[in-house]
Length: 74
Ligand SMILES: [Zn+2]
Image: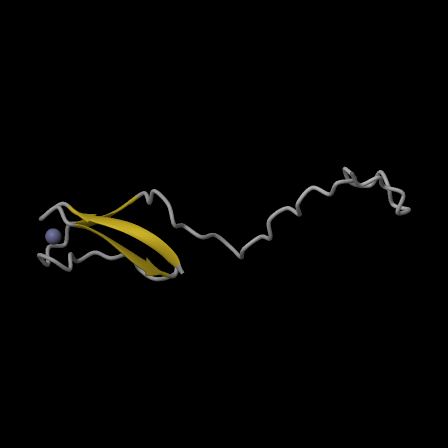
């Protein structure tokens, strides 16, 4: 599901709706019923694809420099 921002040019109401990209966009304003709703760029909240795991925290060894357990950990 992707969150979309819509704005009605009829009454000026702004609302959000989440629906799959394959679904048709909202055309009718839920407030005034006018067919003047247009999609505006969302300022955030758009989720594309799955969640990528964050990069692992930096190891005290600096990574790869002490594979043999010889790292001096202060
Ligand atoms: Zn409206």
